[in-house]
Length: 193
Image (cartoon, rainbow, N blue to C red; front, side, top):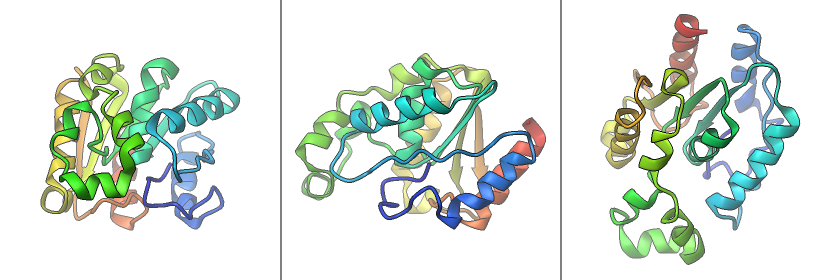
């Protein structure tokens, strides 16, 4: 899954090809959910993803998401219980984060309805319900400078999920489709899958 900024991507986009190829090496078939990001809330994204997941799940399931896609994967994991959950650059859009948004700019970008929905989800509650031994939090090294509040959300969620892994991907920024991010996930997969 790609995130909110990827409004024009669909399942056939080449950005997914590297991940499909990578996870195929470990026996996973890559399937990309067709989430429509426009004018919807987290709750609506989650409903779409849950329906997709239940129709497409296999014997062993690895769910990976980036940014808003990571939020969807993270928020649905306590119910869906995938075998592996890879949370890449988790967007800081939860009740604990709403007060840190720069007021008018966030409201303009996300709208009142979406902002209210953000506030209805607690990252702390979600983290406490995850299988820590199979949850991996990732972020790009450059995000420490570019998006420090995102890195704070990732680190905080990792601390609240006992047994989870925290992976900083060297030289990577926010976008999971970059070669640096792909290489970081490949390195993780070689050691863990």
